[in-house]
Length: 128
Image (cartoon, rainbow, N blue to C red; front, top):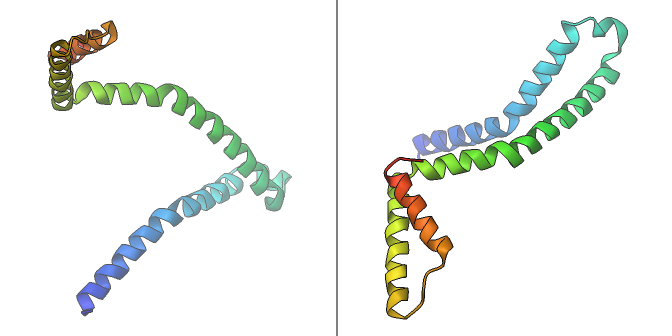
């Protein structure tokens, strides 16, 4: 292994470690700043403030995360799907070919499949 390869590997290792460790550093800085720049330092010892603040933050982040996961994430996925014009065109063509194949085998497509093809056509025309 040459020196350049060794240096590149260490650089990648450091980048990966920072990705894992940065949230801990950011939270540590945040909790210290929140404690030192408020009047809480006069009322509450740091060893009580830190765990109470951490538990409160975990509860708030859990609630916000659940709301995001159940509401906003579905919207984001739908909008991403509707913006994927080429992928939707491929899906429409494939579905139409399957419908044609089904007709040759005397299999009638369900209304849901026909509705899906119309939806994909609207996406292609950017009417959604």
